Image (cartoon, rainbow, N blue to C red; front, side, top):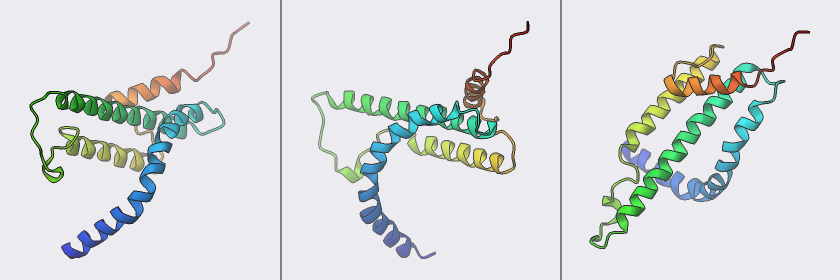
Length: 146
């Protein structure tokens, strides 16, 4: 693939699609975030789908909390009076280590997709899978014996 072609396509996608879709995604993301656990309690859905919804909720909640915490820390650092002007291109990312975190979440996503495609539970993500199992386990009703 030619690097100039990749740059051209990236700029095209950024100018046309992202500018139109980004406001919609910013509005829909909280709705989807809180719809996932609501849908996951539907007992008529397969248990694997319910587990995946719970796991996606935990991952998305972690991403949102991390992002907002980093934005808040950045805002606090900008409140000092000794700032100097930094051009936008040279500015540090909002969240330090964001590329590593993004790669980690991408790896988790690929693992979840491949495990689900094979028909098994993607329960190998240490703390996230445990939390998703807890949520799924609390949905079961216990029968009383008479």
